[in-house]
Length: 74
Image (cartoon, rainbow, N blue to C red; front, side):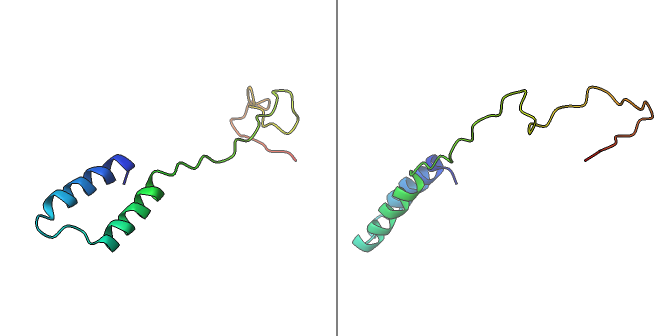
């Protein structure tokens, strides 16, 4: 559920409750959930490797053996 969908659900839930609105304890729980839903956590960014770094995987331009097989050497 996206934060937007959660907000629409919460709005409908509160509107349809009529004479039985959420209790103070339920509103506290709802507020806690909202805080969780809207907390944006971005993972750490990994630095990119330079193109000439030997650890970087390089694409194979063509099969040098010409037999249609891919060979992996270590």
